[in-house]
Image (cartoon, rainbow over all chains, first blue to last red; front, side):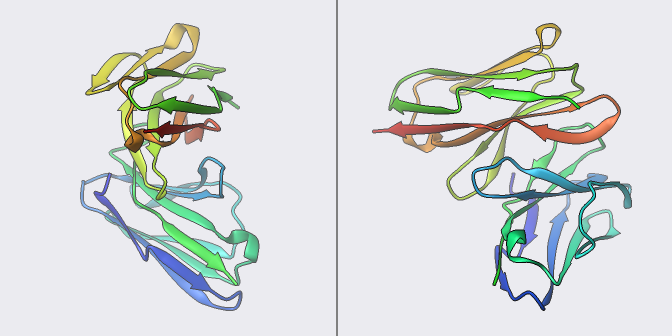
Length: 112
Length: 109
Protein backbone atom coordinates (compact mmCIF):
# COMPACT_ATOMS: atom_id res chain seq x y z
CA UNK A 1 0.00 0.00 0.00
CA UNK A 2 2.91 2.38 -0.56
CA UNK A 3 1.11 4.06 -3.49
CA UNK A 4 -0.28 6.55 -1.00
CA UNK A 5 2.61 8.72 0.16
CA UNK A 6 2.49 10.66 3.42
CA UNK A 7 4.95 13.26 4.63
CA UNK A 8 6.48 13.79 7.04
CA UNK A 9 6.82 10.35 8.65
CA UNK A 10 7.38 11.90 12.07
CA UNK A 11 6.48 15.31 13.45
CA UNK A 12 7.07 16.86 16.85
CA UNK A 13 5.44 20.21 17.48
CA UNK A 14 4.56 22.53 20.28
CA UNK A 15 1.02 23.50 21.14
CA UNK A 16 1.39 26.94 19.56
CA UNK A 17 2.92 25.75 16.27
CA UNK A 18 1.25 25.53 12.88
CA UNK A 19 2.18 22.59 10.68
CA UNK A 20 0.71 20.58 7.83
CA UNK A 21 0.55 16.91 6.97
CA UNK A 22 0.61 15.96 3.31
CA UNK A 23 -0.83 13.00 1.45
CA UNK A 24 -0.42 12.23 -2.23
CA UNK A 25 -1.71 9.47 -4.51
CA UNK A 26 -1.30 8.95 -8.24
CA UNK A 27 -3.71 6.06 -8.72
CA UNK A 28 -6.47 8.27 -10.12
CA UNK A 29 -8.57 7.73 -7.02
CA UNK A 30 -11.36 10.25 -6.45
CA UNK A 31 -11.97 9.73 -2.73
CA UNK A 32 -9.41 10.52 -0.04
CA UNK A 33 -9.57 10.14 3.74
CA UNK A 34 -7.89 11.18 6.98
CA UNK A 35 -7.88 8.81 9.97
CA UNK A 36 -6.51 9.20 13.48
CA UNK A 37 -5.16 6.21 15.38
CA UNK A 38 -4.27 6.25 19.06
CA UNK A 39 -2.01 3.57 20.53
CA UNK A 40 -3.61 0.12 20.79
CA UNK A 41 -6.83 1.37 19.18
CA UNK A 42 -8.23 1.00 15.65
CA UNK A 43 -8.14 3.91 13.20
CA UNK A 44 -11.00 6.40 13.45
CA UNK A 45 -12.28 8.40 10.50
CA UNK A 46 -11.80 12.18 10.59
CA UNK A 47 -12.63 13.46 7.10
CA UNK A 48 -13.69 12.21 3.65
CA UNK A 49 -13.16 14.08 0.40
CA UNK A 50 -14.98 12.90 -2.69
CA UNK A 51 -14.21 14.54 -6.04
CA UNK A 52 -12.27 17.20 -4.13
CA UNK A 53 -15.26 18.17 -2.01
CA UNK A 54 -15.56 17.52 1.71
CA UNK A 55 -18.29 14.90 2.10
CA UNK A 56 -17.80 13.75 5.71
CA UNK A 57 -16.49 15.59 8.76
CA UNK A 58 -16.71 13.41 11.84
CA UNK A 59 -17.15 16.37 14.23
CA UNK A 60 -13.42 16.97 14.30
CA UNK A 61 -12.22 20.03 16.31
CA UNK A 62 -11.46 23.09 14.21
CA UNK A 63 -7.76 22.94 15.15
CA UNK A 64 -7.64 20.29 12.39
CA UNK A 65 -8.32 21.80 8.97
CA UNK A 66 -8.35 19.60 5.86
CA UNK A 67 -7.69 20.82 2.36
CA UNK A 68 -7.90 19.05 -1.01
CA UNK A 69 -6.13 21.27 -3.60
CA UNK A 70 -6.55 18.70 -6.39
CA UNK A 71 -7.58 15.09 -6.94
CA UNK A 72 -4.11 13.74 -6.05
CA UNK A 73 -3.34 15.75 -2.96
CA UNK A 74 -4.81 15.97 0.53
CA UNK A 75 -3.46 18.15 3.31
CA UNK A 76 -4.24 18.36 7.01
CA UNK A 77 -3.41 21.72 8.56
CA UNK A 78 -2.69 21.68 12.28
CA UNK A 79 -2.91 24.61 14.67
CA UNK A 80 -2.98 24.93 18.46
CA UNK A 81 -3.02 21.19 19.02
CA UNK A 82 -3.30 19.58 22.43
CA UNK A 83 -1.13 16.77 23.88
CA UNK A 84 -4.07 14.35 23.45
CA UNK A 85 -3.81 14.91 19.68
CA UNK A 86 -0.59 12.92 19.67
CA UNK A 87 -1.33 9.92 17.45
CA UNK A 88 -0.65 8.20 14.15
CA UNK A 89 -2.42 10.06 11.33
CA UNK A 90 -3.26 7.88 8.35
CA UNK A 91 -4.31 8.94 4.89
CA UNK A 92 -6.20 6.64 2.53
CA UNK A 93 -7.64 6.77 -0.95
CA UNK A 94 -10.16 4.77 -2.95
CA UNK A 95 -11.32 4.75 -6.53
CA UNK A 96 -14.71 5.99 -5.38
CA UNK A 97 -16.69 5.92 -2.18
CA UNK A 98 -17.41 2.39 -0.86
CA UNK A 99 -14.53 1.01 -2.92
CA UNK A 100 -11.56 -0.58 -1.11
CA UNK A 101 -9.36 1.93 0.66
CA UNK A 102 -5.57 1.97 0.39
CA UNK A 103 -3.56 3.47 3.22
CA UNK A 104 -0.34 5.40 3.43
CA UNK A 105 2.32 4.64 6.04
CA UNK A 106 1.11 7.43 8.32
CA UNK A 107 2.60 10.39 10.16
CA UNK A 108 3.47 9.92 13.83
CA UNK A 109 2.61 13.18 15.52
CA UNK A 110 3.79 14.16 18.99
CA UNK A 111 2.55 17.32 20.69
CA UNK A 112 4.77 18.71 23.40
CA UNK B 1 -24.58 2.26 13.67
CA UNK B 2 -23.05 -1.00 12.60
CA UNK B 3 -21.00 -2.93 15.17
CA UNK B 4 -17.88 -4.91 14.27
CA UNK B 5 -16.53 -7.50 16.67
CA UNK B 6 -13.30 -9.43 16.21
CA UNK B 7 -12.11 -12.53 17.98
CA UNK B 8 -9.89 -13.57 19.55
CA UNK B 9 -8.46 -10.27 20.86
CA UNK B 10 -5.01 -11.81 21.31
CA UNK B 11 -3.35 -14.84 19.78
CA UNK B 12 0.07 -16.37 20.32
CA UNK B 13 1.37 -18.96 17.87
CA UNK B 14 4.47 -20.97 17.23
CA UNK B 15 5.94 -20.55 13.79
CA UNK B 16 4.33 -22.96 11.36
CA UNK B 17 0.95 -23.10 13.10
CA UNK B 18 -2.37 -22.29 11.45
CA UNK B 19 -5.00 -19.89 12.78
CA UNK B 20 -8.47 -18.52 12.10
CA UNK B 21 -9.53 -14.97 12.93
CA UNK B 22 -13.19 -14.03 13.03
CA UNK B 23 -15.09 -10.82 12.31
CA UNK B 24 -18.80 -10.50 13.13
CA UNK B 25 -20.84 -7.51 11.97
CA UNK B 26 -24.30 -6.43 13.01
CA UNK B 27 -25.79 -5.27 9.68
CA UNK B 28 -25.44 -5.81 5.94
CA UNK B 29 -22.23 -4.40 4.47
CA UNK B 30 -21.18 -2.81 1.18
CA UNK B 31 -17.47 -3.21 1.74
CA UNK B 32 -15.42 -5.50 3.99
CA UNK B 33 -11.66 -5.31 4.15
CA UNK B 34 -9.03 -7.20 6.13
CA UNK B 35 -5.86 -5.31 7.05
CA UNK B 36 -2.58 -6.21 8.70
CA UNK B 37 -0.92 -3.49 10.73
CA UNK B 38 2.73 -4.35 11.23
CA UNK B 39 4.78 -3.27 14.27
CA UNK B 40 5.90 -0.14 12.38
CA UNK B 41 2.30 1.00 11.99
CA UNK B 42 1.89 0.29 8.29
CA UNK B 43 -1.68 -0.73 7.48
CA UNK B 44 -1.58 -3.24 4.66
CA UNK B 45 -4.55 -4.34 2.58
CA UNK B 46 -5.01 -8.09 2.72
CA UNK B 47 -8.43 -8.62 1.17
CA UNK B 48 -11.43 -6.74 -0.14
CA UNK B 49 -14.13 -9.34 0.44
CA UNK B 50 -17.75 -8.21 0.94
CA UNK B 51 -18.77 -11.78 0.05
CA UNK B 52 -17.27 -15.07 -1.11
CA UNK B 53 -13.81 -16.57 -0.72
CA UNK B 54 -10.38 -15.33 -1.78
CA UNK B 55 -6.88 -16.68 -1.39
CA UNK B 56 -3.49 -15.00 -1.53
CA UNK B 57 -0.56 -17.27 -0.77
CA UNK B 58 -0.76 -18.49 2.83
CA UNK B 59 -3.73 -16.26 3.56
CA UNK B 60 -7.33 -16.79 2.65
CA UNK B 61 -10.60 -15.15 3.62
CA UNK B 62 -14.27 -16.05 3.52
CA UNK B 63 -17.22 -13.75 4.05
CA UNK B 64 -20.72 -15.14 4.57
CA UNK B 65 -22.72 -11.96 4.16
CA UNK B 66 -26.09 -13.58 4.92
CA UNK B 67 -24.78 -14.71 8.30
CA UNK B 68 -22.81 -11.51 8.92
CA UNK B 69 -19.35 -12.85 9.52
CA UNK B 70 -15.97 -13.09 7.86
CA UNK B 71 -13.02 -15.38 8.58
CA UNK B 72 -9.32 -14.84 7.89
CA UNK B 73 -7.17 -17.98 7.70
CA UNK B 74 -3.43 -17.86 8.18
CA UNK B 75 -1.57 -21.04 7.37
CA UNK B 76 2.05 -21.95 8.19
CA UNK B 77 2.45 -18.74 10.18
CA UNK B 78 5.75 -16.86 10.12
CA UNK B 79 7.23 -14.33 12.54
CA UNK B 80 6.57 -11.62 9.94
CA UNK B 81 2.84 -12.30 10.34
CA UNK B 82 2.99 -10.68 13.79
CA UNK B 83 1.02 -7.50 14.27
CA UNK B 84 -2.63 -6.51 14.49
CA UNK B 85 -5.26 -7.77 12.09
CA UNK B 86 -8.24 -5.47 11.53
CA UNK B 87 -11.55 -6.15 9.90
CA UNK B 88 -13.31 -3.01 8.62
CA UNK B 89 -16.68 -2.48 6.96
CA UNK B 90 -18.88 0.16 5.35
CA UNK B 91 -22.64 -0.14 5.53
CA UNK B 92 -25.63 1.55 3.95
CA UNK B 93 -25.07 4.74 2.00
CA UNK B 94 -22.50 6.02 4.46
CA UNK B 95 -18.90 5.82 3.29
CA UNK B 96 -17.36 5.43 6.74
CA UNK B 97 -14.99 2.50 7.22
CA UNK B 98 -15.77 1.08 10.68
CA UNK B 99 -12.94 -0.92 12.19
CA UNK B 100 -13.16 -3.76 14.65
CA UNK B 101 -10.92 -3.63 17.70
CA UNK B 102 -8.44 -5.97 16.03
CA UNK B 103 -6.73 -9.28 16.78
CA UNK B 104 -3.20 -8.90 18.10
CA UNK B 105 -1.08 -11.79 16.77
CA UNK B 106 2.37 -12.76 18.00
CA UNK B 107 4.22 -15.52 16.14
CA UNK B 108 7.23 -16.92 17.99
CA UNK B 109 10.11 -18.81 16.32
